[in-house]
Image (cartoon, rainbow, N blue to C red; front, side):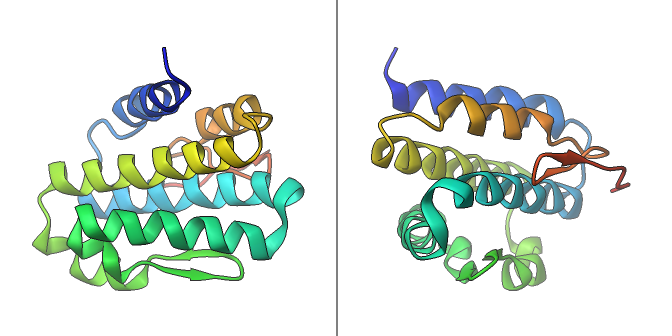
Amino acid sequence: MSVSRDHTNHVSTWLGQAAQGLSSEQLLQLAEMAMAALWKRAYLTLGEITLAAITDRVLSTAGEKFPPFKSLKVTPMGIDWRELREQHEVLSKRELAEGIRFVIAEFMVVVGNLTAEVLRPALHSELSKVTPTHPAIGGKQGKRQL
């Protein structure tokens, strides 16, 4: 199995379990928590400038495949989801889930490629911790109701 497919399969499995029964708004919140957790974990190794460049590339590619995702912006703290949140009604829940799956998997693939997959276990672990009621932001779990 290719490494890229491994990341994609991991994200698909996680999203299939974590997103069951969520509304579009809740799905966006879940994606925001997931990317925040992955950002914080990758930040420890890569730093802000490298991570921002990676994320900018991922969002550019995502915007080509999922035009509403062009509204996502990179900030020094991660991804700004506000504009997408304001227009999420134009996407079907399926399209939204596909775009989210792509962003998260592509982020993991690019980080993996740049780090010779050294962060793969840590990123997979962080993502697995993120659930609608247990956001794993920065490795800490806390209750948050969606």
